Image 1: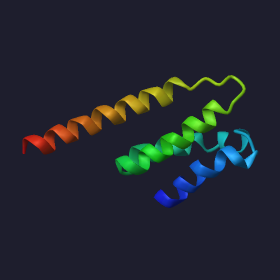
Image 2 (image 1 turned 45 degrees about the vertical axis):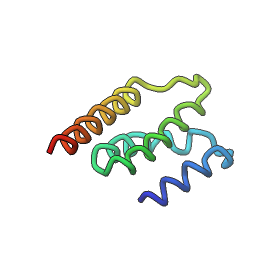
Image 3 (image 1 turned 60 degrees about the horizontal axis):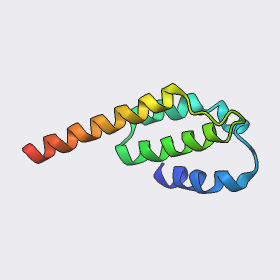
Length: 85
């Protein structure tokens, strides 16, 4: 999964297909972020960010921002738990 997302992240800006092709899959990418490890979720969020920024509006959604903040908080809490055990 990691290699696939990394390839999509690197190829998307050069693909020229625009965001319409991946717009339908944004919901799946958001769900994926809740189910996988932090590293893979970060790569999925990078792809979501690229798709959202390639729109004509250029604005990222509140859903994306909330998910980024939630991931950082959870990662920070897990890191603190690891340090204190």
